[in-house]
Image (cartoon, rainbow, N blue to C red; front, side):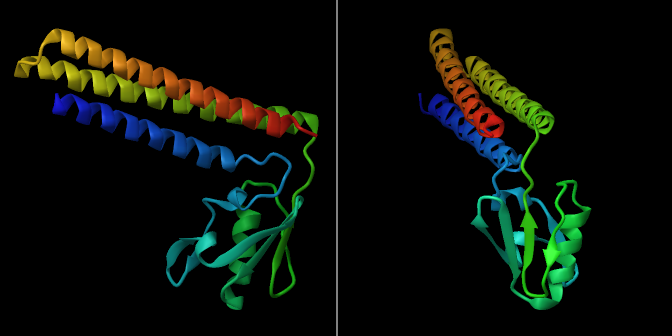
Length: 186
């Protein structure tokens, strides 16, 4: 039935969205290596509106421990530096008037364990999101019985939703194991 396929496709797309969100959140958790993703979410006041740093500057990694930020306009360099200092990322940027450099310090064992814990929290949130999507899809499918769709068809569709959920949860677990290894790597 076409309507069932729409619900299943919608559930899959929404679960894909949950995975993409998870990857963005995990990208913010630094693993000892410099990455432009570390600054995602930081914004500055740019001509009266809050704008992501990525939209007003180029962010590069000249080496594994350094971030280089070059603003498109020199006059906003101090605003970018201030945003980085005020964030809770723990970075101390240096500004030479044209470029902001951030030296990413190596992680100690305690900090690595904290970051793994933070990653686990993001993983759990993603799993909960995927399970909520499953529940919403199943509820939508059950409503179709009132429209005359057979219970057997609904049951088999719910099983397909469960298989989809299981595959996404497995994907999330795999993402976590990669991130944990990355964080704990010295």
